[in-house]
Length: 480
Ligand code: ADP
Image (tube, rainbow, N blue to C red; front, side):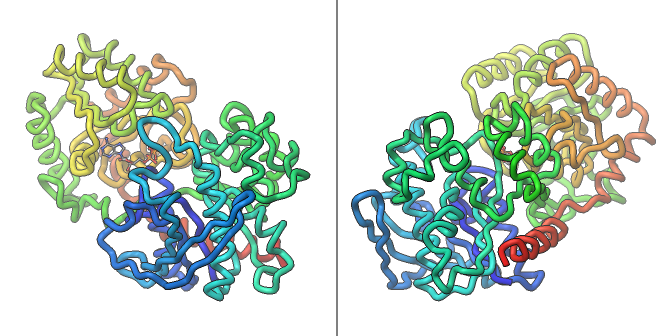
């Protein structure tokens, strides 16, 4: 089975979020299962610093963009440690820039044009390289037009007749909405600019195009697949998703089990597995408390949060609960993250005023993220919405008990057997659930059971990749 994964990011070439992790890890696992995946993404400036050899293929191509034609070139590399090919679409005017999508908090003004070009390039590359493709797997709005071009312009060409298309949504909140005149850039007839297809409230919506033209649609957890079929998580496209619900499914992302394994993690003060978790975590907790300048208190619960300081992640609830608890409860807190300036100021102030209870590291630090996952007792993820979420999986694997809001992937991974969850999005619900967790923490037997269950679960890619293989088969059947 030949799968071409079209994406705007993939580890280690270019990354701004979880999409890159999926598109870097899934193909490796697919290859292990006997499929023949390949990845295609833009050759941003950053890709040249990924540490892997990249060769020029000496193949140039031309695609129409509005009334002009634009030349592109092809580069090739492969994913680390395997021979999965990675095709990089070079067009320096579009992609030789510092960032992927924008700078100084603003999107690049030509983002529509850049990704129209990329989508056209994906289709052209199949012909140029004479690739056999059974399914094109497109991801997020940046590749939203791939399915449209396949159905509208390429369908009758011999090589493309039987290609199926899968479109995966990683976050409904990012839709690639552009003013209507950008329809001209696509080269597609205005007849497709209607509310059943590419138009959304007067604008061109590339995510919507992705949903409308795909043979199959997936998202990154079964619960999120349900939630996006209604408001507010459908972000206005719930009607489209209801209409296509028969081809919509959810597959949880896996975690990178090489990077996140307490038995071999080089960032930790002590390595441990499920048998040595009690001693291992105690050593990691003491080392973390020392690193953060918190008192060495083995019996005080240490509560961690890692992530973007954004309302999606429920950071407003975390801030509220810390302020409510800090003067009355015997709990330590550590926050690792960057994001909205008002939360930087708030956590800095709390850490200064209450240095015995609150540590704030307002930066991006992967090693510290590992040490928090190992050294904390409880991990907070009170997200407003969460398509999948990875930190709760790392926590389970590291014997750290998650306290989460039951939404999206958090609802699919956290149950009474391995953690605590609440429904209502408010700080009282979070506070009550955290109380429950702290009470259980003081009952070592019950706590050890939670930890043991979490550590025994398998969240690696192996399981999810098998589900993707099935979905590709279903997609091929739908096409044929
Ligand atoms: P997102 O919505 O941001 O993609 P995920 O939970 O799916 O959320 O993935 C975010 C990833 O980035 C996780 O691996 C998390 O540990 C990591 N991360 C986020 N913020 C930081 C930070 N400040 N330092 C280190 N790692 C971080």
